[in-house]
Image 1 (cartoon, rainbow, N blue to C red):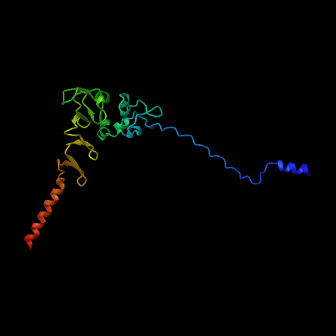
Image 2: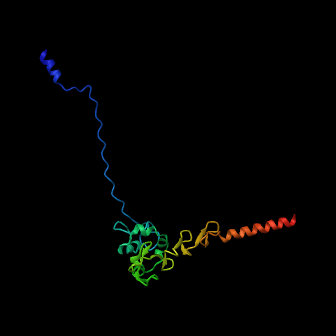
Image 3: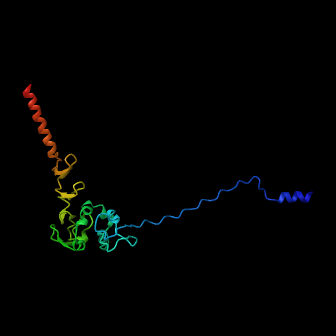
Length: 208
């Protein structure tokens, strides 16, 4: 009897043990998404999925003879995410027939007659490379010239998709840009309504 009790005492106690839950498997981090387009042509139009996002085409794309303008910008080490934020660039880059020629084109800045290439002044606002100058300029793709960013900053209307006078503004009522001046004058379409209302008041007063 003593040997049986000793054997029972040495057996592992499995009654009070709670079954342990299996540890959840850790998910492997998903690889970064690679830009991919399904173009059958050369990505010359805005229909390219990569071009819409302001990205260059890669090896996973199906395009042939690709001329995606953002792939060309990448060749010149231009910051693509920053370039994609430039609405003037996004609205006009597909209209440029020879983008490489445009990027290598030389422009003369009016501040100190310094000559620069466009590829060195993109994207957004850049400073004149002249000694002790540092004047701010921004390129207009609509006008193909540099704009004085300090005194006459570039104004590119996102709705009209073109550059205009830096004192301009867009009227949501007539869906056109107009000269608003420094003080924010109302659109002429609203002034016409005010004149019409004044004429109606005069007519009613004359009848009375």
